[in-house]
Image 1 (cartoon, one colour):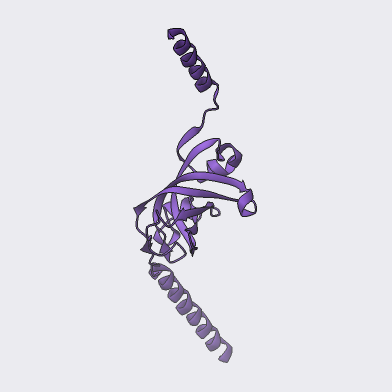
Image 2 (cartoon, helix red, strand yellow; image 1 turned 180 degrees about the horizontal axis):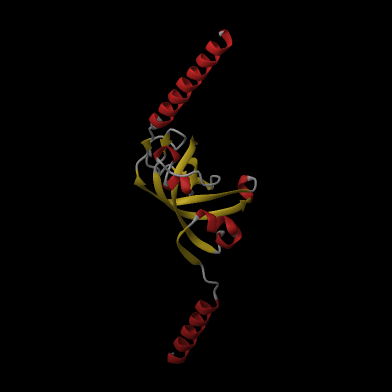
Amino acid sequence: MRRAITVMLSVAWSLCLAAPAIAEVAVIDVAELLRDPAAYAAPDVAEVRLRGELVGDFGHRQDAVWTQLNQDSYSAAPILSGGPLAGGNQGIAVRIPLAIWHEAGPPGGYRHRGAIVEVAGAWRYHDPDRSGESYLDATSFRILEQSAPLHEQFPRLRLLVGWVLLVGAGLIAGTRGHRAGD
């Protein structure tokens, strides 16, 4: 009997060692995910965890909310808040089941910064059930910062320079008109 138990435990241990490992990934960047999207695809990777800004639109469906998660320089520092122009937007589609969805305020856009969130789930790379769409199928969703309106700063210096140039042009035009009449 002891020998049978020892053999079964040995076989079970061998099977555990031979089984393919399913990786769980810490928070990664969208850029890293998009560099090699197949490397993070389910079922080989148990979970992908991303942080970023919810932008564009919230597509409410019967079972989930679809949106875009951006993680670029504009999600970190929007232009209207003084952030620099720094290339294009970089993001991925996210499907968030209604069971874990929390209203995040309006999505990000030019005049509104979307909620900054952390989303974890399975990366569905070229999902055949969704016509080849690639997206993060969320299993957890956490709001880190609420959405907020962005206010455009009034360009007082530009206005002052414009008035100075306009007055200068008027003075030049006025003195030329006097010379022509002499």
